[in-house]
Length: 532
Image (cartoon, rainbow, N blue to C red; front, side):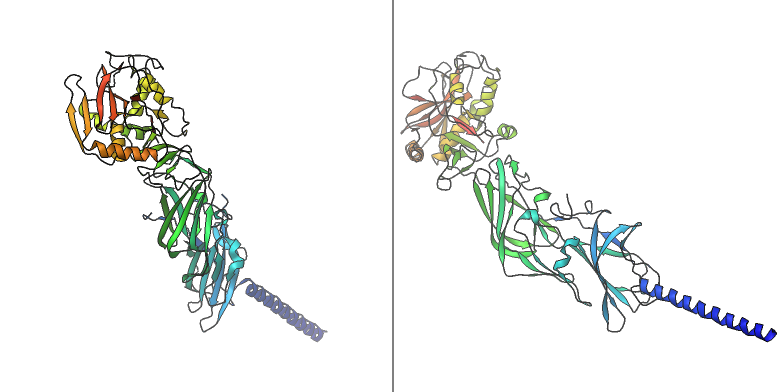
């Protein structure tokens, strides 16, 4: 009985040991399956993330679809990205141990949904390749031991372009056992547009198209872009309303072009207004990844070109379907006009307004806007003189009877763009600019009329000047300017307003007539100007 008991006790002990062995093997097996490396290290792989800001180049909100370029403030803990990781076993073998897995911010760390661990030995290394957004995974090719590549064609429609970022960290020691820093970089160049120094006509920008740019290539996570052979056009449609003021943005972040870095020459930018007006600019340059390039677009205001009813300007040849309303005689404006928002220039009406009976009825009583005689040549403030009278700061209340020269000039019967000053009576300085610039001569002499105290500016070569002015106005079938007197808004003193005289043998401005003047006759005309 004793022997049998001892024997059964021994069998029970063997069974217990066998059961413990089975459990131990099961535990080891489970540990091996939870690790991406064949080891028992339990240090969890996780990441720290840095996102670069875009760098401005002095030369010139849905994150997963389109729009604003990604920066540190717009990529946050609610975002996610994809990662690829290759392991090197320390001899000669590579294996992909994380294949396009999503990384998100969970439990206060950036990590993959499936837990992975460091191998724990220095001779084993890991290379990481991260990219954002995750939606590009189908365009990425990868072989273990080599950097992934992205084959990409930039969408022609800027609304469908995305800001792609990548981060690479090669050959990280297997016993690191800490968060792996991932410093992302933008792989595209950002292209924006603004109003240039010379300004643009105000209006609504329908689209901007840039053509002659490489549109495809292959991006290596280690070495950057290899360009494809094709070029294309890219269009952004911002529907932005601009005033045309220099420096103003035309495209916001949401309409930034994301272009493949490249060197290029003779690319073409076409800006199109909602009215159909277009302006073209040719550019050359070199785009670098991560930099922002702002192209300043302008339409030069050229003396002798024309101002049109839609608020644009240019030659007759480039605007065959438009109606010119004035000839441009200055591409600068006064300080006051700049404050009023008229920064591009001045233009003279193509036809005469109704001739007034006089400058005003306030003879002998100054309208409180007398211009020093020596300053008449630089008095470009015809619009400000009109506002002075309009706001009842003169000797009389503004009306067709009290200030007929001002009233008739303002009510010249040609409709003007809403963003312009509207028509008004030009000053002596504006007539000086018109005669000098359109007549192509500023060779003048000065004289003082002792009787009236008025200051006169005479052009020495009046014959050629009047002939040149006549040839210009005939080009647009406008009323002739030669052979007549014209009132100016500049007031010489309490009794005299200024006049301009354009004859074939005598051209001058600043000469004075009494405010009441003489009754209008065939020699007296009125020509309005406009600031824009």
